[in-house]
Length: 373
Picture 1 (cartoon, one colour):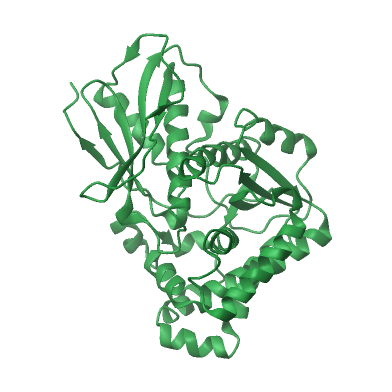
Picture 2: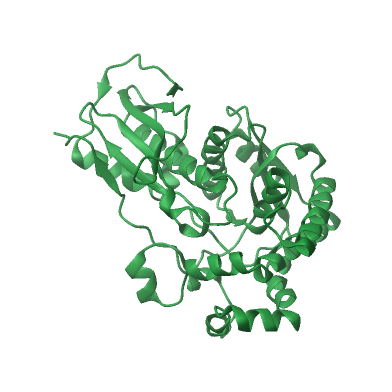
């Protein structure tokens, strides 16, 4: 394990009540399509292990990049919750990633010590959510952007980039539409999307993961249409008539109407780098929440850029590969300072009403090695 911080104060052994509170905070983290790829294991010496549950990985995930980002966000929540208790979270990162016989892998270990200081961002863990509603074209203020940047200034490998010029945002809207279109045309991604959707409140409650369609802020009747589109033969036929273009239009319109777009990148594209970048992403999101700003990550562009930069698009059909190569070139022209860095999250940000429905979470999945007393 690679140790981030060594304890100088007495260690703390969390009680069951404290442990439950810490794990609840961790599970409030965002994850791709709300797949919640985390698992926890406690030890009798007070150490808490954060594990990657590979059985929850999404097929579109490139080298577990998105799972690592989600696990990093959960880790950051855990550290913030510890600070609220006056504890310091002492994090050790795993040097070697590899699944055990049950498909789990340890990514970090956390001990707790006295002497922690509460971070103001910790007060917004419960409020943070994904807001897919329309945002105004008014750009976010420079002061707000400065405060958000300050929230990750201590993290060397993470970098924020902003777009607020209308011509650039219009170009980005076209890139987002092109990426979303592939997501509806490529059968493995179509299968993944509909596996994660929950079409009724009862479905959402029974699994407490995935995407409740009410979270998507769809127009009236769109959810019913979406049910029919889960059948790939029908989807494929309708795509030939231009359905994928129509399906990609709402996300493009969301971007086109937004005043500020943000991009978080990392210069460390290892699995550990993305784990740490997940902590940065969560801090950016919480800082935006603290400022009363809505936040909406857009997943398709990071997926396809990663498929292109890390795998050369070999998992795609030839015409989709050419399209991804084109959008990657267009994206680099919009964010030239990010060339060579790994894309962590592309997001909309602005003022908006609160989202109508929030994604549910499962209770923390805790595997005990030795019972805590």
